[in-house]
Length: 349
Ligand SMILES: Nc1ncnc2c1ncn2[C@@H]1O[C@H](COP(=O)(O)OP(=O)(O)OP(=O)(O)O)[C@@H](O)[C@H]1O
Ligand SMILES: [Mg+2]
Image (tube, rainbow, N blue to C red):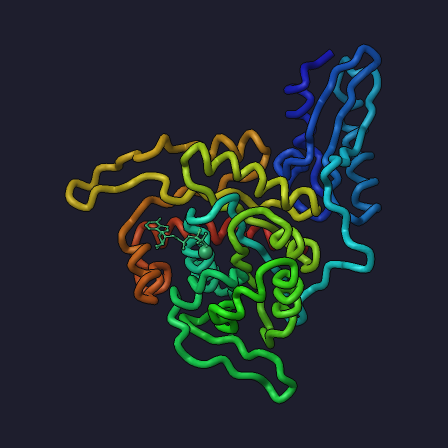
């Protein structure tokens, strides 16, 4: 009988229907057990679509059964006890005019999620995609500030919100509609409800991709958005510290539990390059993001150094990926953008 690891390697041949990527890299294989009667493969519930599930189960069964020495195969669907059930009547809505919606999440705050979302959006724009960016964080006006949203938001005659435009991308910040007093009222479950409504009330026009900068964390608010908006994929941002890495798991699980493909993990503030000598300093034990992504069976999209220009770009509304096309970190963002675009194109195939 082969080992679980050998079986896992074989299961990489099973593609997620509609993708060129396999179910192992999507993190769907939760467990492989060798029982004396045969092999038991446990999969995470991938999607609400029964046809897709049935096909994956069949492909896994066939692939595992074809391995020499495997007498029988049983495929289980994991239904974790804490899997949030979709509220009755709730369903995932596509955003009109928008081809793909992706969400950028992080397990904890302050890891540079908004910085990454902004520069990633700009790098996707540089690749020729029409991009929108929604800052779904009511309490942190980061995105508006990072791209310089000083103008007033206007409405169409139908009272739909006209997004602002800067550096060739359309964006809107929830925070533009909230002052300190209303932020207090907005706290709690109402926020999420309003947030999803808000998203659909923006006149985005035609977009290739809308990037959602989710509020930090993986609580109810984030989960509700992932359940109400038809997401093409999720991206998880982390820093290399152990404490942040632990939360990556939660970020990845959040997407997987609601059947949203994880496009990958990005490690931010991964290392520091000395401005004087050009040497690379590993302030935290670096590489944890890549390792964890591998363990979780999701792609690792890249690592970004700590650079002053990235912070200054955010502070002075001169985002690096837009104003420094020659910068090595811009190149890193473009590489990440290319991988995401690639992943999204496959969802269309
Ligand atoms: N790679 C980096 N190099 C230097 N500074 C960075 C880098 N990434 C982020 N920063 C800076 O770190 C701070 C926090 O980043 P950011 O606001 O993007 O984090 P966040 O995860 O969105 O935070 P929050 O949880 O508050 O939403 C900002 O001042 C930002 O400019
Ligand atoms: Mg933020």
